[in-house]
Length: 406
Image 1 (cartoon, rainbow, N blue to C red):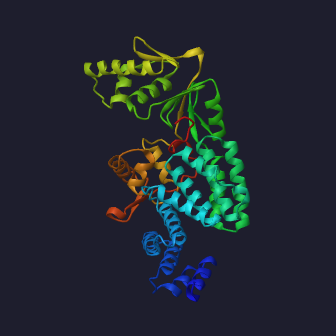
Image 2: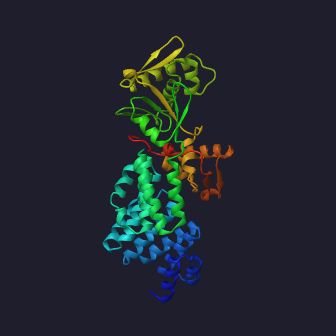
Image 3: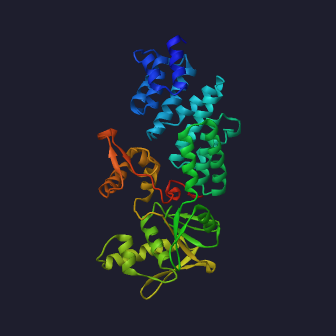
């Protein structure tokens, strides 16, 4: 390592990105490209940073696999900040293995933390948990310990384990204070605040009630039959019936739960499920078919009986029926939840996280933009979408795979 590269590395370590750039801005050798890429990331120019890091990785080649693996790791972290989630996970896993082989334990752990955070954004909680199991947060430097505990806390939140989340986030906050990094302190404080904000609305007999995550956990562990409008499914003790891929059946279940213990008129069910205000005999015939399908799916949980006016939900074993609704009234609640993290998302990344088509997401964000709930930055392929953070409630339950069994 020559003197300029060493000086630029010291400047970056001290947080002086501009000073580092001044030393290597005109150089195109692989170490200089890598340092320039990291400096541009620190300055917020993620697109330029990723281009420089890719060039550095190619220039290092396979002969210098340790340096190349570090570039791959840095590029993956930049991609995560850009919410570019389409890249393969294998490159980062290979980089972590290479870093382990060469004894670079700190960067190997960092690679696994980046991979875990990517899996969390995509709602792939089992893979995130497997990655975090390989990280011992107790023996890490304060910065890595804070990042690891934040990931562990988020995994617990998304798995609806608020007690474990609270403990992990308390450790994250302590580690962030030891590291002295304001951004980590703020992230840990924000995550802990989510535990004390309403996460859902309970609709049953009587007035709707706002619930915190601990209360949602207790409700799902109770004997009630819960029609979950956050994750679009029906849950009872020991049973989870997902209906996210069957929107008509879920719409019917939601209306029946909302009206319980009363019945719902046929025309109301038709209007909600089929989105029509002028039902005819074809709609009524279709309603009978869809009710039959729903009845077959929930037969081990509840019965659905016909009444003179419509249909009524009759839970098994005399259970109470509860409708668990999102804290925000929006058909695009999950999309709003993802965008509310304050990061700029592309429609392709949103589609990956939601498991929807990109065209569906494009239509949805256009509707939200027209309503003033989100805004766009950039043009064409560089366009990204942002929403203001939601301060009054948490959207944990609206994120992908946030409930057990989902």
